[in-house]
Image (cartoon, rainbow, N blue to C red; front, side):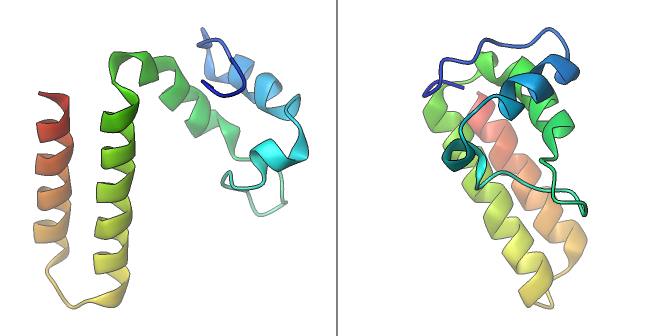
Length: 95
């Protein structure tokens, strides 16, 4: 949003059309649905609320989610423990 100066959408569906207007290289890394189209609805919801955070906080939150995902799929740790830890990290980033 910052790099391509996308405005904060009023609804997730507005963000879908904004994403579809971006050049291909700008959306290559975005999550896809099974049919190959961009899964932009969840991104639209996130875009509506991103203004409440600093970029650094958003990056840290994404890294915490990635670490949690890796632990969920590659370790035998208790899933509840992993998810509780990521929630605590996310809440800590907000304070």
